[in-house]
Length: 549
Image (tube, rainbow, N blue to C red; front, side):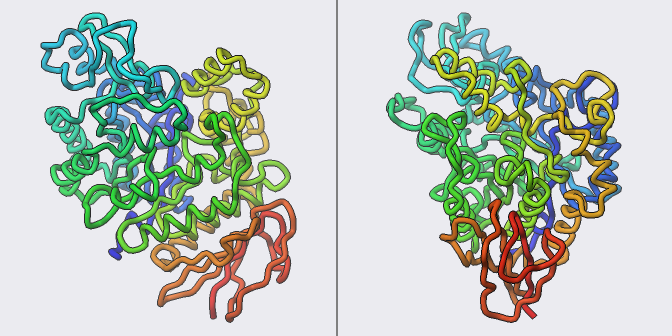
């Protein structure tokens, strides 16, 4: 296995509009990130991944791009971006940009031209089918509810949008589109960007027959077998790597809806020369019920462990894992995988211990380092997310119990991760002097950076300790992995070892003290998230690190 800087580093993900506002307009901006770079550096992270900051009408908060070469003025424009890049360079931090090229905004000039006529040179930049306004080309449903087809009067045909109606899918079958994309990639890499996170990259190749989906097929299967992993996806990724990515010393991570153990290894195989890592969602759809994310079921912990084990095995010899528990599209990790009430501090510390001791590159999402939690707004009007709002409308139309559905929103809405960063106990958590674009979580007076800095045993300080420990022990980066108690309903216990060291990790994923017998071998307790080690009993949400001596 080759050693790489991006394998040995730690990624900190920033959702810019929610991080720090310096203008008082209620939106985070790049100057706010610049102001906080010393804080970010103090965490020990080495890479920053920024969610989209390009020009956009923000139908899906920047994932609908109208100008790929322009940084939105609401974030500070291109000059602020250049300042940010320079300030990061001074601190040895690397920048990962978000690339959204499965679709553009319908306000992008390509689409503005494409919709005018079938003869327009840009028409074939998008995907068109059908000639009857009253009949959809097929029964495909958008990720955000409703048909994937929208009628265009001027050309008398429908265009495809797997996401919102303002996010028309690009036609990657057209070599001109691919050339445009590669030029955009080259533009940012030539500026000095160190990597790309590629949004829904598994969807860029379409199954061109556009056959109807069987009505009984669960959406998770539709995503895998119909929308994702299309016939030319690997050809396209190899071409992008060959044409532009391979010219730079960068890192690439592809978001992979529909990517599982069957498909995943090929995307990241070092031999295949496509991507360095993927984000699969096997563990993040684990509590989705028969009707999807807003029909949640209890988390199967044994399956949770199996997913990490299986992915580690699949990529152990040819590829690399992304290790993450949440991001801007999912609930707060301490609320979803921990206990955000009585054991918020203990479980938040347990989760980062897990993240920093599995094989792969770990990702920390803003606010998790202080144990930020889900938010429970009393009304749907407080929610901004297009997915949440569309799901609410669909549930209302279906006659569902909306009080029950609101509880599901509290559990699963993407806005849980998008509430403003909680810097201090002042109004609006020190995020803005104006009105925040989305309401601040009401627990900010107690959960904030300033308070955490002052507490010696805070979650924040523990994050710094764990990140430093991982960076100081390459065994935790490259070493072998074995799950020692795969069937245990509460404990996650595993070894990480190589010729340099041998570590034993144990985590109690429960609210109850749990008995545990240390495996044979001369293991010395290093540290954990409790102040001392009680040999035979693990406290609720306790993590321990042992090293062989």
